[in-house]
Length: 115
Image (cartoon, rainbow, N blue to C red):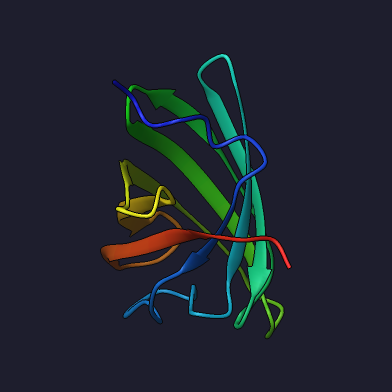
């Protein structure tokens, strides 16, 4: 059975990402409808970011574009797998690659409660 919808869920990066700009201060607010996913994100080195893509079962496939705190834009592609943690929160295991510059890597985000 697939993990529940991402719609309205808030996530935070689990660690600073080596080779990327996402870090532990970066939060993502997801939307989902009819197999489409999107999110706005910000925090840490990222002033503003947007991602958009699709969901097939527990796999997300999306592109992202972001503006960092130094005023530079960048973009890339990511494939994520959704899993459910023991406490019921969701986790995203991500494999990403820059498209606007060299570099790739892996990262993870976990669902957080709203303040």
